[in-house]
Amino acid sequence: MSRAESLAVAVVFAAGLASTMFAARAGNGTPIAFDGTVRARHVPAVTLIDDRGAPLRLNAPAHGAIIVLGYTRCTDQCPLTLAKVAAALRPFDARTRPQAVLVTVDPAHDDPAKLHDFLGAWNNAITGATGEPATLAKLYLALGAGDGRSSPRDHDTRVFVIDRNGDVRNELAPNVSPTTIASAARSLTGSD
Image (cartoon, rainbow, N blue to C red; front, side, top):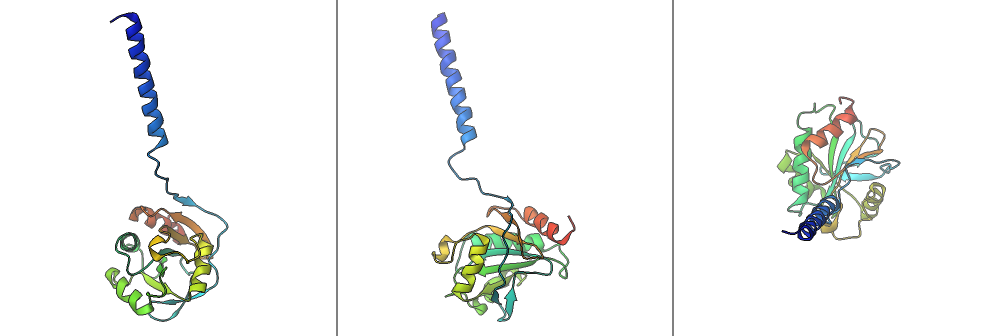
């Protein structure tokens, strides 16, 4: 191979290596899910209805709260996320663990009884919450999760970690592990 040919091969190899490195850094075009601390958002003082028909407020939970938005007819992301939340909170003492809450994004369908039946899959360790659409919209907006006017299938799938003051402490990506949820919950109870 001549010197010119060797140089051409080296240039092509270097260009290929550089483009591979660039592509690896640029990713595959999939957006990176946010998993971190957020500031200056507070759960509004709205009254929802829990899955037993009792009033429920989330703006000052005694031991914090883990909020998931979802609906009972969901067959994929909602059950998976709820299973992770239930697994994450299982080791906590029932008297001091953060409250896990599924807030429906389908209030026209998800009444307290349907929520209660659905959450039985997790031994009702997770509380269901529904309410008037306008009331739920206030909560969704405060969480930065839309206004409740879109289809339930298009709902926000983040896990929201709420401290005792009703402030949004963390947002966890939908693909979060039970270990990460447990760590966020421990930060609420002061045992981290």
